[in-house]
Length: 494
Image (tube, rainbow, N blue to C red):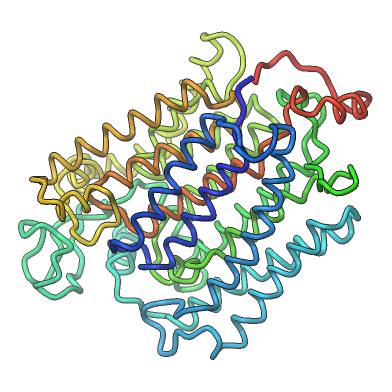
């Protein structure tokens, strides 16, 4: 039986999310032990290593307990230190408009997860999602002009695309001082940054509604996070009967007290709350980093993979086109698609076709500029000495590392994650999300450039996997027997 280890994966997501609170995702020695613990837990979670305290049939209540504790810990951590970098007053307790929705979201998640009444669960979901939307819009209002290059490069790219020009052929304002070595010297001339839009076209298209309708691309990112959270809640509570994963019992984990079961939306509700009240979520939104777009596309891929698996190639193709390194998701098609190798090859081909279809029209406006700005730039970028990675730690230990060696180390770590995922990850949408998260984790943790946004994507990937994960029949024989009349058969192996 291949199965995710829910407690280990939950522990990894919680520890990593809380670790980012220590140094805002920048390099600091005190953060590295927690990063290492989160990485070990992630490897155990994807490999299905049993939780050492109790038998496997107790994994579900342990996971539930960790999620409950995590919601409280995350909300507390969010309110415990300045929440952003460019606000006039970043202390959370000076802003009732932030404190109330954070506490309200955490409370609603706990109450909704504890209740089996659907009206309570639905109300709790509305409160959590509404609080997440409010926190995001509040952040943008309180920090309207963050000093980060994401903002000017998007603005210039929007203008170029509106006139039919390539967003990859532009240059944009250099807002940093000369001593701030965020770019290689050959990439700047003192006034302008000498490359164009650095992300795939789909990322620009997904950001455009926020800028066009509300004057700030970050509104689109907030919407993406809220939709991703909604998909986490929905994936377990509205699974269609007779799908590829209906063999798994969808009754929710045991509360471990009187043999009763928690509601099917319980785990997803807690995971959604953990995403929307993550300790550094305000900082993530303020900076305008584009990770919310792959997060919502990963959630959509998993949700469709559970409810309508024959169509999962469509969101998978969009996911692959949303960020350069997420092309690696194609390697995990066997975790997402059923059938023979020919069926899986056809599934993968359609996903690639979608990725190409949303990328080529804009890329072909200036192919050379696209390759220079969105592809080769990743190889030219310098080794960031403020990156939160073990590779950066090796520099302190007097290892000789340049950007080429750091890139090789990152790719080697990524190959390890791919190998572990192929070997042990379950052939389910949850296994797919966990595999993507583990690969992104190892690429970042041993990379030349790794910051809060990189790890925020990892945390979200694990939360999506936990929300979508089901209880294998073999691990819950009593529940399987009691629920046999409500479960449709399926020959798909775990």
